[in-house]
Length: 249
Ligand code: PGA
Image (spheres, rainbow, N blue to C red):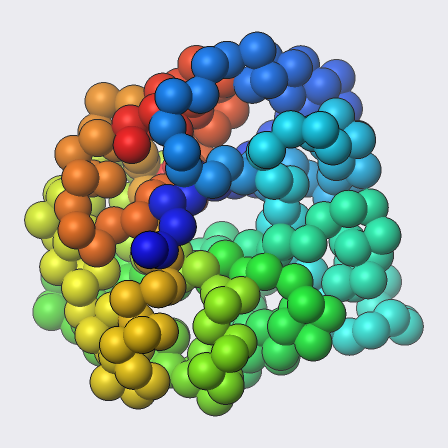
């Protein structure tokens, strides 16, 4: 059975003190669901987060990484650096990386390949903008984002891939996709994977929804057949809200 996952993307929030505080609050909360829980703090606090969560079931993920092994890439972080601080999972392709840092499919493909070579797990994000959906292009956009960055992979690589559908118009806007819109897209994505690979892979891959998930709407969204969890931004910055979302399963 495919995994249920709730991952908190902290983005560029929480300094060292706030990271400590939020993690200790998360550790005190009672988790009643069996969903896998992840948090993605900023790079500089990954080591601290790894240390604090060493004996817990909460997994620490990075928000990005570079495709090269090492070298002259000022300001960048490699997979081996992440692994050296206990981080084996990375978020790739977030819409903010695509939008503000020009990360396009061809670059993301290189990052995916590097992460897999380093035996890391990947949460691969994609999603359409409002301008795409408003003219009915959302399926086409999502299909090409997935196809261009992932469909060269071998069957066995898919064990390391989690997909995250995040419609850009729903991120940080308070305007969540309806559970029906999420389900419709998730079913489309699962079918795409089935057609290109096979149903064993498509049935096993977890597909998360992201975009204004809150304790108030999590249950209904997670209740949909093809929604296997969430990638949570704003609501992950508060321990009560985040754990309430985790416990929505
Ligand atoms: P949001 O962000 O929950 O604040 O909308 C989601 C995300 O960007 O992953």
